[in-house]
Image (cartoon, rainbow, N blue to C red):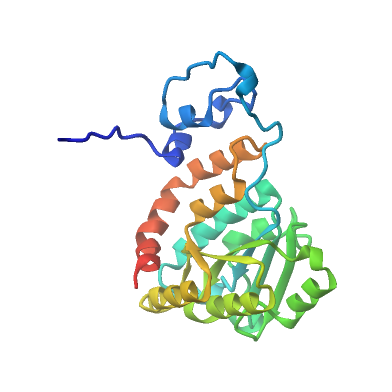
Length: 270
């Protein structure tokens, strides 16, 4: 007895094939999400009263935040696949701007190791360079390895409502600053869900990366990909920002593939 399966395109691939302008607007008369996802014909039910629809699409995460850890000029030639980390971070910063997600940035000993790299600056400063962008909730220089500095702890304690519910973390190095940031957040904010972006973190020695990510998984951190986190954060194709996110995904597709090939397998080891 043989069983055959019909191959269906993934949701992510389907959305890449659709131009943002051609996407249908949410409607109670729209084709079902399952039919859209799998290119299946849609049969109109005879009894519309039995259909349950949500009038207001909800995002997947209530209070997400993006943490950008020590992506500085002096590390450019020292970190394994540094350009891939920058590429993934750029995509996530564009996503944060589209959904108005708070951004937290740190540098390690800025005077000696330099500013955050120039590629990321347009997303962190106001137009014309006149101070931090309104979405940048904190931009701290530090000597502490982890991002959870006394300044950030004070910020969260003085405004408990600002504590994120879900944090995506990118930066360097996986086994030092990224790891210590996660451990401090888990200790001080156990109800906050921490996600380390596998295609957005690295170290000088690539062998450190899988060891660090395996250790963080054991501690309760979720290791995922940038695109996986973005879609989980959105949660619903009906949100108003979805069209812009599709544009971002399409425009960064080549960089995403490169980062996944270089860094993704390291996140899956051990």
